[in-house]
Amino acid sequence: MKTLAAILTCCALLGGCATPPAPAPDASLFADARFAPPSAPVRAADVFALSPEMKAYLAGGIEGRMLVRGRTELLVDALYKKSELKLDYDSVLTRNAAQAFAARSGNCLSLVIMTAAFAKELGIPVRFQSVVTDELWGRNGGIDFVIDHINITLGQRIGGAHWAGPFTEAVTIDFLPPADLRGQKQHVLSEATVLAMYMNNRAAETLAQGRIDDAYWFAREAIVQDPGFVRALNTLGVIYRRHGDPGLAEHALRAAYAKQPENPQIVFNLAQVLADLGRDGEAAGLRTRLAQLQPQAPFGYLDRGLVALRNGDAKAARDLLLREVDRAPYNAQTHYWLAVAYARLGEVPLAREQLELAMQTSASRHDHDIYAAKLERYQAHLTRATQ
Image 1 (cartoon, rainbow, N blue to C red):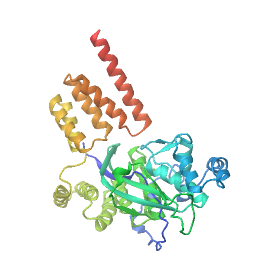
Image 2 (image 1 turned 90 degrees about the horizontal axis):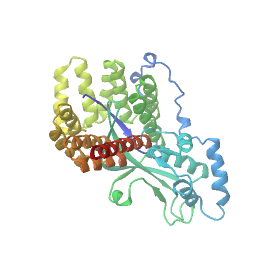
Image 3 (image 1 turned 90 degrees about the vertical axis):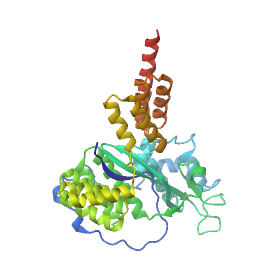
Image 4 (image 1 turned 180 degrees about the vertical axis):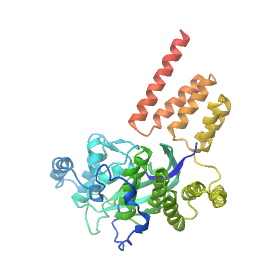
């Protein structure tokens, strides 16, 4: 199956450092007249805005206790201790601050944006970092996503410009265990880049849902917020291709390629667009370059395993899917299809184990419940078969 490659940010941060004004975006990248207006306003001002419910939560749960405990400590306890909000991780949808608070769930970016919104309201210094980790991929709606990792730091050391609580150091909130972060490089991001990340996520998510017009406006706003954010250029190129505008897609992807010529996702997408335009020689050259940059395509073993399953070769499918699990152990879809392969081979305990792993690694409560139901039906089937 051919897929498009977009880039999704798992979580994001807001830089507290001063940055020079960003250059104006290249207006030639946009084609507003070719798209219907967005179904809802696309406004950067909404991303960190507090809802009345959030302000009431601050007034009732945090501000009244500030004389006894520090702002940072209270905020961390209120947001991330199970006795308080009881937030759930859900990687399916990127929400703004108010939406994440209302749903009590979100992906890393959503929860970090919500945390930043509260911190800014309380006057707590905020710093956000992108964290360099092993490459992680997701797939939704025929689009493969690179998923980045970002965290947020609240407060400053005592003795700094602001006293933000009894901590001797600033507090970093991260969804990875501390051991996984040890030694990892981190880069401070500006607020403009955070906003671009949010808009780019929404563009990718709405595109996966088939809402191409909305996706365009989110990608456009991402570029407006940070014209140097290359991933939004890549996403815009993918949107134009899906919309049937290969010339515009090439223009956006050429702009991205000029900035990051060794980015496999950009090379892949540009090669597809050139092939659409009948420029097979240029496309072949880029595919050769892609094979050098990325010898094994994302989900390559998964895709080949699915082909083997369709062809009735469960043993080959099992072997290929095991290789995919070894390379990317946290993908629920791979665990599910490996369970199917094991079931067809009659390896019941291993099939059940993979269904349980699919449930545990699912990206949302909805997906978790789907895999749980599949596991329940499978166990009921086994019970009937042994009676």
